[in-house]
Image (tube, rainbow, N blue to C red; front, top):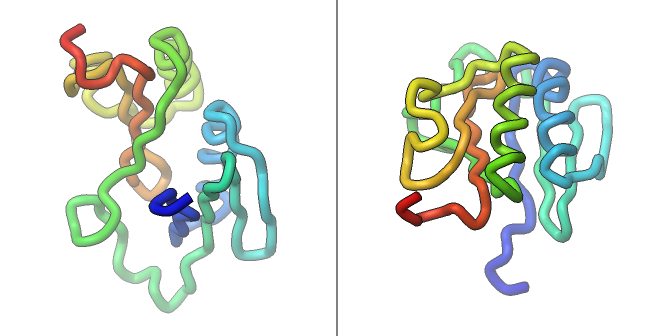
Length: 135
């Protein structure tokens, strides 16, 4: 277990909007709801979990941007190219902002999709095992 990530906690500007976004996505990726309380919710996959917490009102004055110091993005493995293609369809259906769509699915050196959550955190889902290969 040494070195395995235990959890990630993300403060969000609007908990309800974030949960609407992340709930379906994390379930698609194999996560299950773990904890739920008035100002937060978490999802678990094996021994790792992701927590979303409502940012306290006094700290909402500065908006998040992934180019500032702090979290830039979260990257997950999908299980196939077909999974990634299906995810693109669902993201469009949900009107989620897809990044680098003109380069899809090869914006980097792997078969992946890139998009933003409600706070504009970049999310990547990469087709496993199509990573770091010349496809």
